[in-house]
Image 1 (cartoon, rainbow, N blue to C red):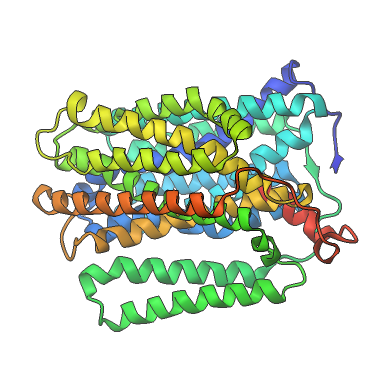
Image 2 (spheres, rainbow, N blue to C red):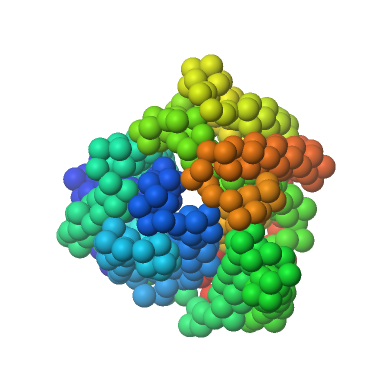
Length: 492
């Protein structure tokens, strides 16, 4: 790996500036993906958006981000991580400005798609910059600080979003990104060294990128349009068929590509395949929970945007306090038990959430469910991530991280599209209490089933101990540059 400047030490002023830029930059994309849910009822009322419009406000961002995040890492490897990171920040800022000024739900959705592209460019760069900028003995400390500070930002984001919606307008949730992005650009330009991978592949897996996006986009549109158009509508049928065909084409493209974005050989490892199946079910449930929970609190239970935005704060705090200990426990006793018990604890929490209705009290109806959810996620997430990354050889740790990240995002994307339909929304509205209440209850019960399914898969597929396999010559010898480039792009 070539670095254009001297490797940094954590305790130096420049090292702290690099950490500041990467934390603040990556927090833009992370926080924006969560606080928008708080603003959805206000967006619906102001722009007269139906349920599909609100779903696409979330999924427009998620679709472009999930489809392009691996490409963003590859671009950074080849053209420079600092350069692509700064392009992503600037792109995200311009798209945020367009979101804040959008006069209609259609233009807001279009701007959200652009936001997701910016997020796909900047998100992989943060960890890659830390990995490339700091000396070996300081990298773990820098990455740990990035993770912890990012967690604090994630906890603060919903509070800020709720306050902005309540005190001003939903538009401020997007407009506040602009001055923050300008600050990140100034700090990055002055303090962050450039780095790239000289062994990065000369070609990109364009076929994989296009077919993957078509597959996810077709399914998302088809399931989102189903409630209003009906299952027999030609547009719905064509969209779903295109989505299925796109995913099949993606698998074929990855199988035939000389430089695949996702080498299919990695799924031959039972622990890796099992970890990603568990990820899909659990994060599909999480996607549905975090999409509908804050809407239900505002529309059905009558909470203010600020109260709804901070409702999940105890769960975030528990994850910050307990995730490291849960990871150490999983390392000591093996990941199977935590990955089985964690989703079951989450299932109990979601079952309690399904009972939240009109006039609900935060202390007696909401807080117990939130605390139990936090305990369940704290038990689950660290061992799940460790299993996904640790079940492949070191040369493919980056690919493992990237694939697991993409699976989680795709699961959340599809959940937001499918859950309202499966829960019986029909042509109803997500901003009318009488129509949302039964949909929320049914959706939470479906999420309970997803969590229980995730626990069952973990018990069957995840071994007590994870042993890194020896990489076969067929896909890592003779240390081909495409594999190395893919690995780095996934980890970021």
